[in-house]
Length: 524
Image (cartoon, rainbow, N blue to C red):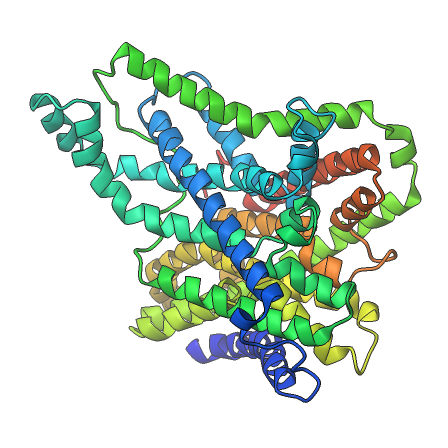
């Protein structure tokens, strides 16, 4: 059984190595060739590279602080209000940014804070202000969902002891809550820092010029506008080094907490003024998350619906979006399934170290950003073929690679538990292959499988980074079309397209999760 699972897993690992190591080796090789020394790789001696790296780190640091610090207050407010009316609905709203494409968030931010928005910032929106607004919209809800379960981990007798000792609010936070947060906040912060460091769509559309350029955007500009592969190679290697540094710091911290939103602890003796404070915090956070999407929907309804929806290019882009998203999801889930089956077999035999290495291999994209992989493919393939003719295979493969860590995260625990419980029984009954999948694995694993394929499909459909590098007018997705409309100052049309992409992503997510994962009330 182990050998039969080792062969497809080995094939997946070989393909992963080809997709990741070949571009990396190509970048390292090209950086040493004559003619690729135009940009000094010692970035501290190059003013442009130094400015790009500083801004990348600075905006990521500010975005992390502005996301995590308020998230502590919001998560605590939700934890202290377990009986809050509409609590589940509000927490569902905080889950929405996790599946909303970045380019849609950009349009939502412009809708609220643009020149004609509800809270107009004018030209000052474009630059660090707009980047921070969009990053906080994404990452504050994420931090809330990651930090909220930590209050559930506090033993009930700690709260009772605090009440008996007459602790005030500050003392309870300092001696009961902060020791718990101190272990999880660094890991959450580094995760958000990595997401902001590798952010592409937000910076590309809201950066506003060369002064607000990150390494990711500089790579894209070097290839698509400056036609300077030498500079792209150096920037890609530089981005790789930064991501590896953050990844090594993350590995030294405690494992990320599970994403759960249900709390069973009933907090008592909450003073009235503190309850009002909690409600105020929740209200402000809800307005911050809900207002941009509401404004975008209103702008789209007021916009040129007939003209935009009557454009045949829009429906071609929608078809491209669905094709890339569903293909990448199917490819990613298939690869993840083979890896996790082999990993579960190794763990069941006591080879836990090898099993962990297999899982880590599937999460390599955490260390090697997709745009760096795309850059390596671009500079390697460009001398031999027209890379724009290979846009679909390249974009689908990279997006499948991007989704693989989510497949491992969603499907891995359930598959390992299933294997540990029923593997010996299946051996005794000679249940294997299709029959094992149909009668055992499908009923038990369909729910996490549905979540994984839905999540990867939505992420691939909303991705702008890879398709912006390789895409053209004929192969444009809805995300790329929104960027092109913004570049042509067709903001009204872009609002309509953004809402269409948002509805498409939400519909595909709900449909895949429901059809594959089954009803939430079903008992398998």
